[in-house]
Amino acid sequence: MRKKLVIAETETIRKKVHKHLREQILNGEIGPNERLIETKIAEEIGTSRTPVREALHSLEQEGLIESIPRIGYKVMLINDHEAVEIWEIRSVIETLAARWACENSREKLIKELRKNIAVAEEHIAHEEVAIFVELDAQFHETIARLSGGKRLLELAQSLRRHALRYRIQSIYLPGTALRAIDGHKKILQAIERNDQEVLARAIRDHLEQSKEDTLRYAFRGDENKQGETDR
Image (cartoon, rainbow, N blue to C red; front, side, top):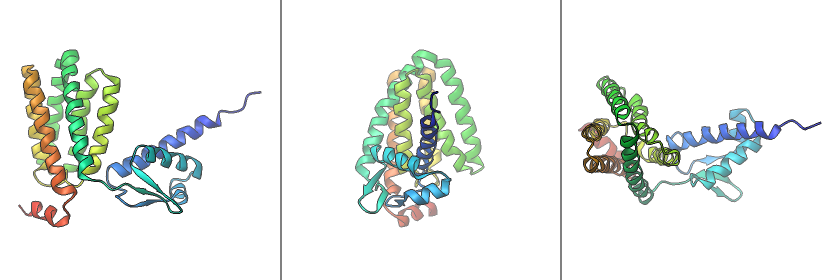
């Protein structure tokens, strides 16, 4: 008689724990240098320590946390060099995704991006910036999804999540969302014109602006962030 597939169940729990912790790190709920303790996490989630330990190991391999002897794990510090690297790679990946999406499904792409921008503008008009964060992600993911490239989509999603970890401090500030929407509009206009050269430039300029907003606030402290709020 065969044994029950307990491993499959454990694997599912590990993935859920991994996803839960990963999202908390990337959206800033668990901040840089914050400790992650197996027993505490297991108690909070209501599971054994094994899937938590495996999830933490996976997060360490991703470079999101580091192991400290006799202490446990802590979230890695973010730095400007890594942020610049992420945005530079995103520029290349998303330009390729947009070109493929135009070749594969341009009309559908235009329709979905138009709707995304319209909904985003409505929420921004009502100062619902938190909802815009999700819509911003959807805009970029729509392009990657309609590119038809499975690996490209995976890369784009991973880079975007890592970028959010840096950008979370700037995305809620006045002006940031409006600048992002303006960038989205220029990308859409280039797609409507079916001009690949203009499209590549629009994506590059949009991500460059996003990078500048991120670097302006993610590494300069609360005083600078307050200054933007007062303007």
